[in-house]
Image (cartoon, rainbow, N blue to C red; front, side, top):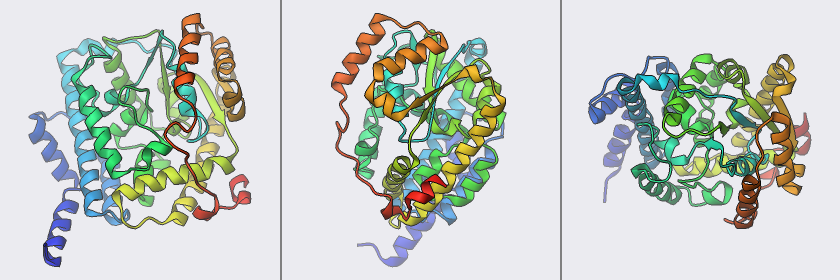
Amino acid sequence: MSTPNQKNSLNRSLFAALSVDTLLEKAVRQTGLTDFGGDAFLEPLGVLLESLREEAGLSALGAFIMSQTMLRLLTNRLLIEKAFADDPSMDDTPIERPLYVLGFPRTGTTFLHNLLACDPNARWLHLWEGLYPAPSPRSLVDDPRIEQVEKWVAAFEKAAPRLPIAHKLEPRGPEECFWLMEHTFADLIFELRAYVPGYAKWLTAHEADVDIYRYYRRQLQMLGTHCRGRHWVLKAPRHLPGLAGLLAVFPDARIVQTHRDPAAVLPSLCSLCEILHSAVSDKVDKHAIGAHWSERLKWNLQKAREIRAGARPEQFFDVRYEDLVATPIATVARIYDYHGYEYTSRFEANMRSWLTGNRQHKHGVHRYTLEEYGIDVEQCHS
């Protein structure tokens, strides 16, 4: 049995691992590479690590999980630069008229994204590609990273056993852009994973930075060099506050924005956040989570409205959650008609098959209330 002094020593060593210099050195040593692709990522990485050390209340396991996450992202950056050095032509890979699903978490974005991914002409981000994007994949069905991510998911779900009820991770399935965006260390996924208010404050001032979206685009080019569809189908809630950056880097993007009553969105989002926080901390404050995401979603909506007001209206198509759930196939057909993508019989058959095999609550019922997170209905609509 370890003594208190031994435990404190262990904790100090784990938290020491959450330093910029230590992580950079480990990534270089692990890969034998030195080019991280510029140094713009260093500022958000430093802010994030400080928040994780000082504010997140990480457990020893949580500190280990977070240090391994940062190491994965840094080694990926090194491997991405090597991939481009080996094949500079990847810089010329086109990304034309990508279709984006934008909306708050829990507004049907995952449901809609899965339906859109049924289009055989579409290209979408697989979870295994997001976790380990480099080198450029040659096949989307036969890649050694798939088995690696299957093991990763199994291990992560042991740390967060309630996660599949709220959001099931499928190694071969379509996933959110944050798995690419997080390589910039400037994404709200880190707010979901841990209590980092200092980092969140920094992030709200930088989410639409063009450099972030340029690096994200570069990863899409790499992934699409050998495995390309007619158009990408992508989604992430961070694109709401980041909309200015998205439109600057993808000026021909077509966008679907989902909408749902905030009183239904907030407690579900808070519950997902609580599940993830519980994997890295023994002290999870539900009311703090509620307060944070109440303000965060208001900010996200405000920024999106500001940018949409000055954008070309024909780029946007709005979908109500209730309509999507009631008539999913008809809703997708309207989206394709509005944005001018080819809607095929095979696409529709694929959607019907997917709906049959993916009934709601397939992995259990996600239960939550406003009250447990200290939120009232008036607060949701203010």
